[in-house]
Image (cartoon, rainbow, N blue to C red; front, side):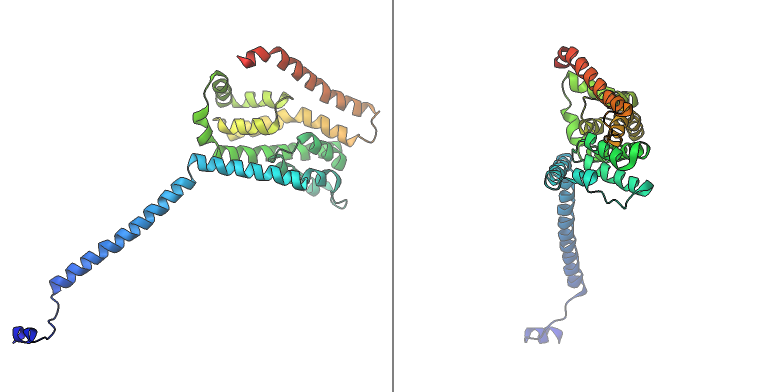
Amino acid sequence: MLDAHTRSGGTAPASPRATATELAAAVPAGAAAAAVRLGFAARCVRVLLSPWARFSLLVALLVGAGAAVLLFQPQRLLAHGWPPQLGGVAAALIFAVAYGVITVAFVPRPLLNLAAGALFGSELGIAAAIGGSVIGAGIAFGLGRFLGQDALRPLLRGKFLNTVDGQFSRHGFRSMLAVRLFPGVPFWAANYCAAVSKMGWLPFLLATALGSLPNTAAYVVAGARASTPTSPVFLIAMAAIAIPGLAGAVVAWRKRHHLRG
């Protein structure tokens, strides 16, 4: 009877075996599509987190920060536009944070040190400037370590680069302390060179605080006593700025052949 009904144009019910086959064919198709989407997302994540993609982001951030400094000149705000009602320890903390952020964008630290002395005096100004130096160095070190180290370390070829990297990696504290005490090394350059090396965080920050103290204190005291340029304190501070710079220039001149080699 069923065969006759089917032959006459009726609809035969689907068998359980056919239904199971269709479902089995449909499930892998959906899973395959999901796997394709996940694979594409994973490839995008790998590309975005690749060493050169992160290094490109670092370069873009630094270029943008430098352009912002040239356009808005935040160092002038700290030096001349600081609200007079802000004073004391809380104001010094705010100044230190702002100091650290804008030093990442290559703002010269001597200008900020002079401003710290003019705004807060010698003692509080030195504390604010050293705190800002450590904050700025820490930010730059973190950016360089996460965004630039993996891309740049394979490029460390040549005797000079390998020597610098080896000194920073094996003797981090004393090497960074010497760099901070030497007046001819730019602050930002030392930060990013240390970040590319294998130097640890604690030696880097501690050496930055101790090594930056003499030069920073001299600038801060000069800024605090700028209204009395003939005072002995101001003259001593200026001598403390000039003598290390002259000594560094002489040492660099005498060692120029070794640096070229």
